[in-house]
Image 1 (cartoon, rainbow, N blue to C red):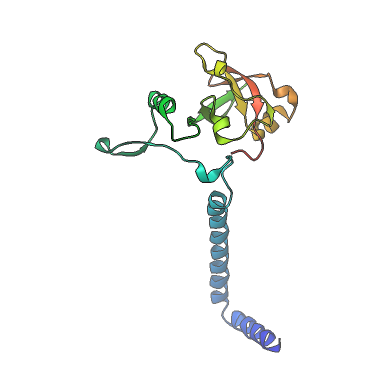
Image 2: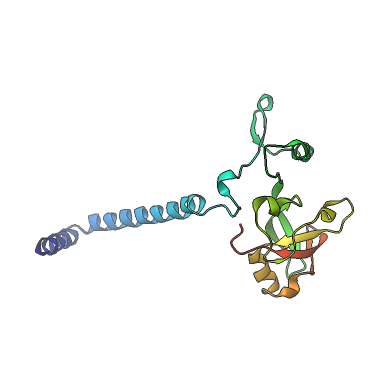
Length: 189
């Protein structure tokens, strides 16, 4: 123990003797610790947090490729998706989604939110169900059906103050009316 105390005293004497070096050491340590924390947050979230799906080990994403056009990882056109879905015997289920940004109105000031357009079986395929309300049905997907939406737990808290009365409310997404039919669990991202 006395060796550690002696080393610490010697280190502090050196730091007082050369204050410029001390500042460089402190800045270097701060940057190193900051970078390590940032990497852990970014990589740790992607690697350590499991996907919010029923069985992550069997979950796959399909991409379209077109080597002649240099497309190695593109979206599968919806008509091709439906063809694969109707003919597939290798998968328990196929669902499609499309990420985007949407202007949300009807819950205060209009704002842009991240959104996904999904097929009606999306939540059954990934193995999650709304915490409140209901899932999509085949009737929701037929042409001419009224627009329905399942919102995230976070949006439910911020836009509807976690009130069950948010179910059945009409919101406007990119100017189109949608009825809120469900709220996802908080852990679903």
